[in-house]
Amino acid sequence: MIDGELAGVLRFRDEPRSESKPFLGHVRSHHGIKDVVLLSGDRVTEVESFAHLMGISRMHGGILPEDKAAIVRHLTARHSTLYIGDGINDAPAMMSSTVGIAMGVNSEITSEAAGAVILQASLTSVDELIHIGSRMRRIALTSAIAGMGLSAIGIVASAFGYLQPIEGAILQEVIDLLSILYALRIVVPTKSVGDFNADEPVRPSRCGIALSALPRSFKAGV
Figure 1 (cartoon, rainbow, N blue to C red):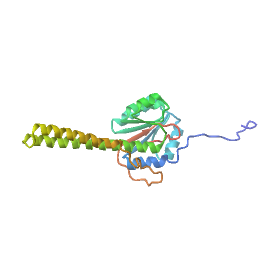
Figure 2: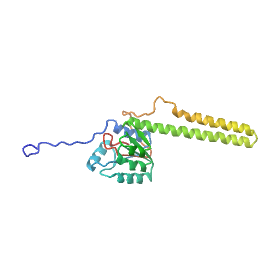
Figure 3: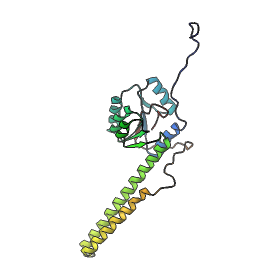
Figure 4: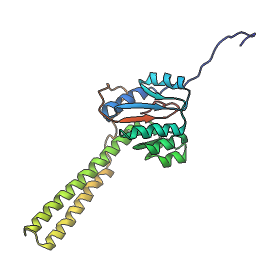
């Protein structure tokens, strides 16, 4: 106000990171995320504006932590959900989701509630975490299935008299050792963990739901 008259208006709002929208397209097309839901305690008008910038059609603004948890429980009852947050208010919702990821170490409670913690608030790190999880699961399943399959073959061979008891016992130990050695591949570093590229074209999605309640630079999240 100048001399009792309105001279101007200043409006402040959060701006998304330049890679936020491409990242949403990446997780939709490469990681099977079908829907993205934005949860925030900020004003509804601000949340709607931010969601529009990010291309997010489903959003809930001005909600409390218990409201977030209730929404996540409702979605998790029907779909597998991934929840990403960075504040203490996100802890209840993280515990209600299929998988919770905490961005940064802003709150010890949030870190305890999350299934995984990313020390740096980096979207690239989120993509790398998803790839690491997928690789671990693939290696674990392959090791377990292969080990059980070889053991089954050994049991059948022993039943028909092709293996003596001592030979079967030694064979089982060898199978166990091979399964363990194969599973240790997870600790071998790879050239590239993630594949997120902010300039990549967007492809159609497949399935799943991801939610976010990050209230600052990466409010849109996944």
